Length: 113
Image (cartoon, rainbow, N blue to C red; front, side, top):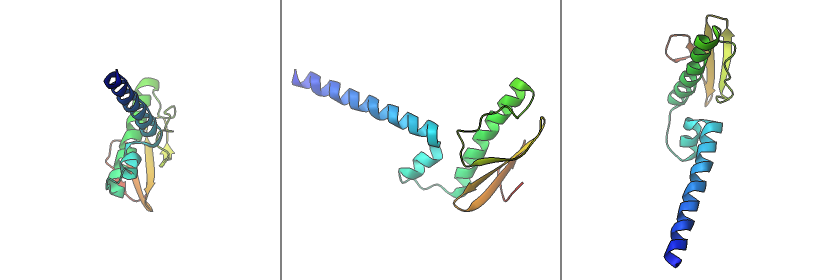
């Protein structure tokens, strides 16, 4: 009986931990969660992760709606849209005081658009 209660309690704790972790990743992004856990990520890697994730959402909106303007980028609070039209965009991200940008179809680069 005690063993069964211990197993149930362990499963409940694991489920609660999984739910909280999933909520944190959805809210803050994977890079921020890794940094909060003590994993070392460079500003370049964190910016690339966020910029490429935001570009994925923009590209999906472009295919779905024939415009990039409908994309919801709230999942990426550090990403800003510098320029956007129906056929092009440029994003910037500020990570640890360093600015990075990503133009449509390119790779993340240091600096502004």
